[in-house]
Image 1 (cartoon, rainbow, N blue to C red):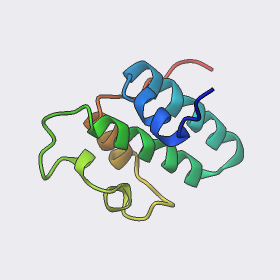
Image 2 (cartoon, rainbow, N blue to C red):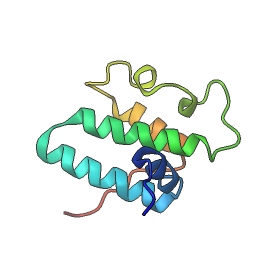
Image 3 (spheres, rainbow, N blue to C red):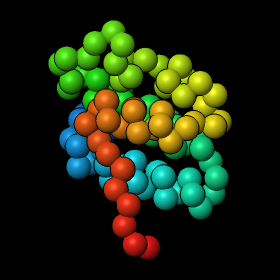
Image 4 (cartoon, rainbow, N blue to C red):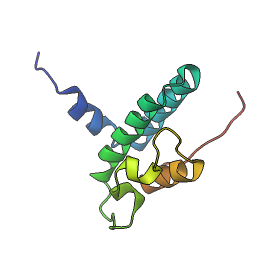
Length: 99
């Protein structure tokens, strides 16, 4: 059985919007349980990296073209506004529903 590079395979899977949304939701759910925001920011970074390769019209001032640390400022305290901007730049949005 051929060995795959996990990160490369993950980035390919994350180009699918539905998969990327489920991946971020699972990561956010875990973060809300354990408080590990670094893990969530890594997941978000993976989605941005994967989606950048599929978005043809990224401009220099587009949020998706910036490192997440620059977009969020202090990565320990990202704002809702910066989070929404990153999601929007890669074609995703927040969905709120009853628990």
